[in-house]
Length: 301
Image (cartoon, rainbow, N blue to C red; front, side, top):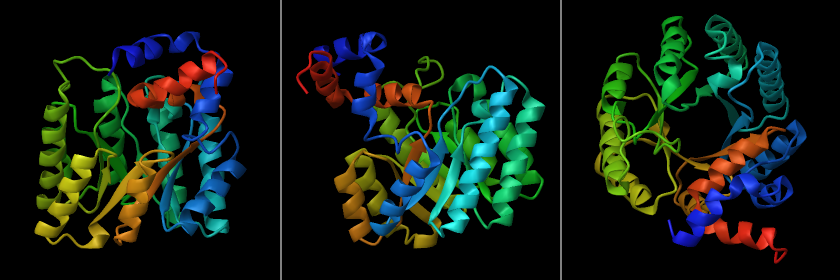
């Protein structure tokens, strides 16, 4: 990250929320379910699938978890009613993980069960390291209870990930593989860009060779996209066993190119009033945005 970009990122807590919101509008659908439906309809029209995320995590009151679960049920109902090509992604800290683990499991189970009734799918997102083992535990419980319509996320920068993948493959698991964006210590996570890339490549091969039911190749990194495209060819991976996944507002030219090549591409569509924390993470991981933040602060754009 350039010195200027680093300086802007360091001052983000001081940036007015209105400026952050202007920059973040490309990354979030909006605050309402109507906003999410509008964006998903447009993505479907452009040949993309979608996964919808109701923003909000690390709750402090279990009533918030219940409200989040209700919001997700409403999203599933609207997907079905409007015949959209979309599923949902959830963060378990928004369902009470770490606050009321039994309650979290019950809410997640209820949502996955409803998704099953609607012939839909729930992706359980991965969060920072204090929740990794617990998140995988909830996923295993649901799989062992017979829910095949749920999947989990593996972060390539975590040193534990190869062992986690080997263990989860025994369950007949489908994965989303991403790099990982949370700040972790060097003891548990790779920091060097090439080390992370190399582990991503290794994990992707491990998943396909281990019989993963389906793999979401979630990256905007051109070398990793190129590697994945070649791997799919070399291993003759059928289209039903993979899809590329990208965030709303990121790498749009790659998204269009992959769709044109005939690959399935799923776009992560977040919405909700709790947009600020998500947006700050997006800005921090994309240094090129720093200039826009600076212009906004000084009234230049």
